[in-house]
Figure 1 (spheres, rainbow, N blue to C red):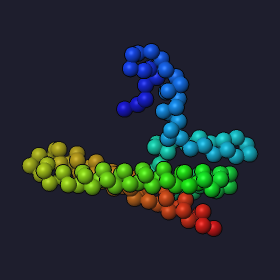
Figure 2: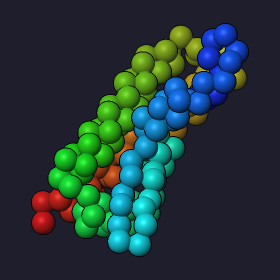
Figure 3: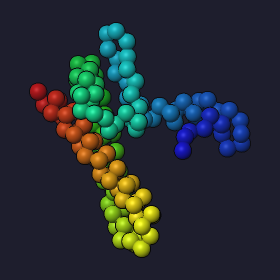
Figure 4: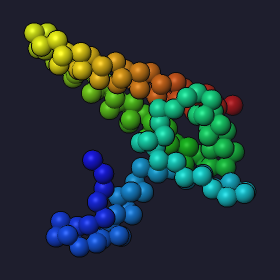
Amino acid sequence: MGISRYNSEGYADPTAYEAMRNIGTFRVNHPSGYIEVSVDTFFPCATNKAKKLFRLVRANCSKAQQDELLAALVRKAKSCLEQAMSMEGSLDELACDPKAYRERLRQFKSLTRQHTQLTRNIRDLAAGRQK
């Protein structure tokens, strides 16, 4: 599900579209330009990519911006964990349908991997901030 450029009546509404699109972005201004990261799509990411981004964040962002990024990552990790826990409870109900069970199990494992990776990303961001 994406964000539509059009309102409920079908007319183009670029102002609302841009506002909704920028809710999940994090911007790092550095001396040679800027980096804009969509938190929802960029994270969870590989540790080496996260460390590169976090190095820029620590060097060029205020403490409040770093706290904002950390809070967004914690919210995303909490959401993944809640979804995985609700999915785990429904696995028993699908035991009689092997195809549906495998699909639900795949989704569950994917969510747990995402949560683990997000936990690593949060750890890396928090560890660098303490130095």
